Image 1 (tube, rainbow, N blue to C red):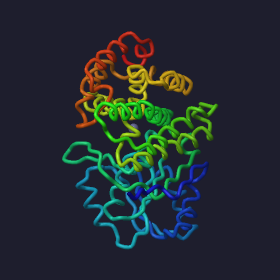
Image 2 (cartoon, rainbow, N blue to C red):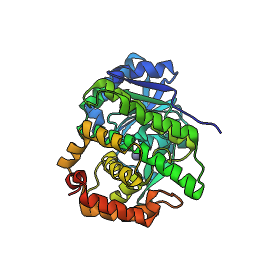
Image 3 (cartoon, rainbow, N blue to C red):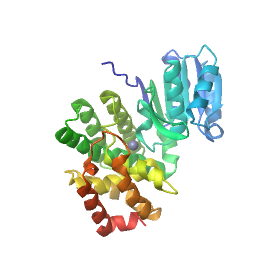
Image 4 (tube, rainbow, N blue to C red):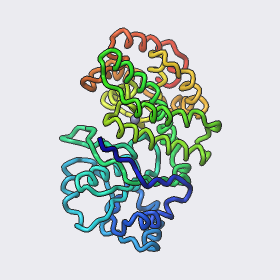
Length: 349
Ligand SMILES: [Zn+2]
């Protein structure tokens, strides 16, 4: 089995200004550049200067607005022939689109997330629209991940909170994976478990839990990269996604106003950890409290009735994906828990 992992990894303040230098060092002189919506206005000038000063030519550039796979396919084959790498800067959408184009054209892709709302920027998959419905497709794991922590620190607080929620879900995801091993004999990749667990523990064990602290942000970015790599190692989303993700996917389907992935996942992680009686449930709760995650969601709560619908729908979302919610009695336990728990009363309204 061949596993690809990012070989260019820069997570530091002002990394954006150095992108030209980083690409040059890797031998990428001709690039196609994809911007997320509104990103060119914010960072276009700095990028142009950085590329020009390292004599990197941008042979194609575009603002990405659609993640429809038909449009992406057409775009892929209309790109100029001689491209050394694809560079994506922005949020999840532009990075997913670029990873897929890179996969089709077999080119390296450099991801430059401007916010860290989930672990998708370093994962081997892409969430795209196929025949009008969102689908997770196999794509290229980025050759490079460049994150400017200065930019992340200025991104809206909700995004970083979302990244923290997504990261904490590794605890409940791993629990579900091991449960699937015991009950339905699903194969568990121990190395993927180790990477995923270490990723979340590095964040948990860092003594400062302040999302404005650049060191803490750097750590979270690295942990999210590791979570993406755990998925690449196991060839599945199992080390990063369990019943808490199923609830979030279901919430996306039933809620009138879904919110950021990791916000939904973080709340579901807290609740699932209680249902699992997860050995790390107190850790999960205290990190969500210390980082201000619960307070943030309490001021922007999820819709309780939609959440309950999502819990009931969750076990039907993915075939052959055994989790704690595969047993009906655990759904009942969960619903009783959210009815009486004080935190749930404030984050689900
Ligand atoms: Zn996730």
